[in-house]
Image 1: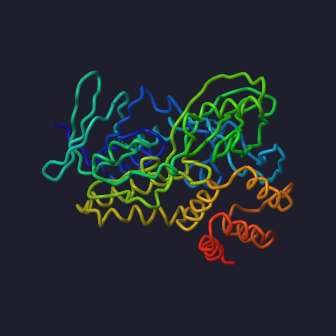
Image 2 (image 1 turned 90 degrees about the horizontal axis):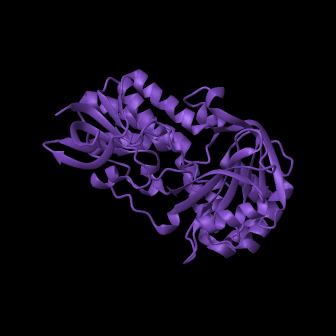
Image 3 (image 1 turned 180 degrees about the horizontal axis):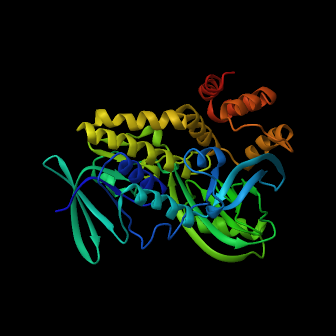
Length: 404
């Protein structure tokens, strides 16, 4: 039986970053990817901020489809305002980007297997036995450490005994078209709200050059008998009537990873497997890159030290939340809970207070606490509104969080 220091299951950005860092740290590493090639199928709007991307990589034109300089926000009635920041972010070509990140893992020394479908995990005599199918046969390897980067379902994490179940409202049901339409404008991302078109969530348009882009909806806690597809078609037929459809994907995006223990004895989970997507947007690429990188670095050192205990691997949890700013994530999570309880009238009211503050503004930085303080200082009636929707305790939390 082949023996490895570490096995990483899942070859998206989180898994590839973990495999890269493990290999750079001297660990003999195997990366298992169930698809035929890295980046083959992408279920993602493909957006990332400049700050998040350049934490690890240069903004290489080969995997950037569009440079974003503007963001437009729509009310349920179609009214909108626009804010600007030069190179605030990018829309990636994930197929190219994912292959690029996997390539860095291979160049660091990781062994990569495609069409390797993980089946089960067993703990025997202090090591993991990792079972998977490859080439039509059942294979098994030994590993001292396993990292699960296997997405929202995370069979790896669950079979290792991690408690990863979430409340139903902690899931985004996302579905999107790849389409061509004049309303998709290169250099600008658009966000839409309204229960009629994107139930308890939002719609988006992310350009990928010319008038081609990713247009989709992320909905939560769907009414009985409804589907995300229903809302997507309603959304597209209204805002992108006559669009030429070139493809479609769907996915489930879990959030709320701050409530999870994402590590255990000789096990860590990263990316969507750890439920780390940003709570309001559902964006998961930044958390995938950071969690994979940190888990790989911590894992490589722990392997050298010969200590893979849960207590030792807690460093992964602590460092991840230091980089990603746990307070900011928790604030976004609580605001998301409030948004889930708003109807279209509520959203119109909030929009009416935000538009005068932001329309045409060129922002200097992305700082959630700074902008929250600005909003509640300039529009204090939003605090009264928040108290009505969520109660005084929620307003006290907002005040403490943003320093009012």
